[in-house]
Amino acid sequence: MGERKKKSAQAEFVKWFGPLLNALRDLGGSGKPKEVVEQIANTLNIPDNQREEVMKSGILRFHNQVAWARQYLVWEGLLEEGKRGVWTLSAKGQMIHLNLEESRDIFLKWVEIHQKTRKSKTDDKLISRQNEEEPEELEHEITPTLLEVLQSLTPTGFEHICKRLLREHGFENVVVTQASHDGGIDGYGTLELNPFVSIKVLFQCKRYKGTVSRAQVGDFRNAMIGRAEKGIILTTGTFSEDSKREASRDGAPPIELIDGKKLVELFESVELGVKPKTVYEVEYSFFEQFMI
Image (cartoon, rainbow, N blue to C red; front, top):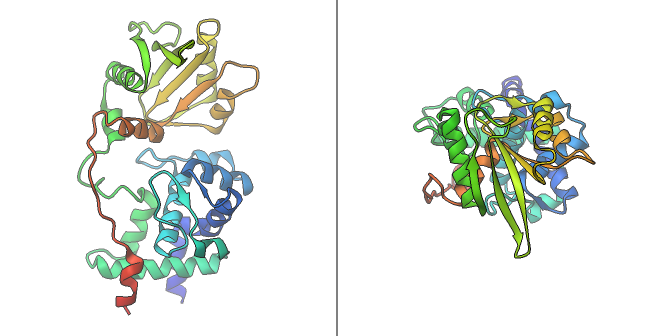
């Protein structure tokens, strides 16, 4: 029993099993990953430094832990497989409230099942991998991810690929400014809201793995005041919680924040530089009955 507890203690994400189910109930049974993560963080008063911690891969650790909790709950049948980008409680999950001990039992059950199907990996290796990688990141060991490719571009190259991305998403007259960077502005474009109204949008591109600070968002806003109705910051990194609050501060021009995860989704939605591929995921709950 001591060894089993040691294994579950190594998997930090186990503690989010119960809060994840509760968050989805609070959201009416379903929600986008970002909404669910925010709900958990706000309900449990997770400190900013924990929410902002970044793994070596550039992914937010807290978000990744909740994503792994979601994956185990899917295997257990408490969440639906559903379409990508929406997490949904199953009928069974609606009725279940998990404490930490029950969460550990679910975790250990599925670690044992997966260990049987991957005989080359020990339990410790499986747990270590899950602590450091995204659930969907199965090909990461072989080929670079889209985010890694974007981070490898030159600063100028990243600005021009962002220009192309904005065009693909409906922006017109998109221009990248000269190398001098006009007051922190990397480019601008026009977005038609309807046949009668268009707005000018300024954008800034930050190609790195770090975290964009509140001061950087404030500097960008100062550069755009009086010149455009809207601003966008696109980064291959992440945004601090303070920077998010600054971007939506009352009485100030709004700024949209596009972090690395959202950036990848925007590339995928228009298939810019990526090709769709069908992947079949094993429905482990089906095979569980044959492993006894």
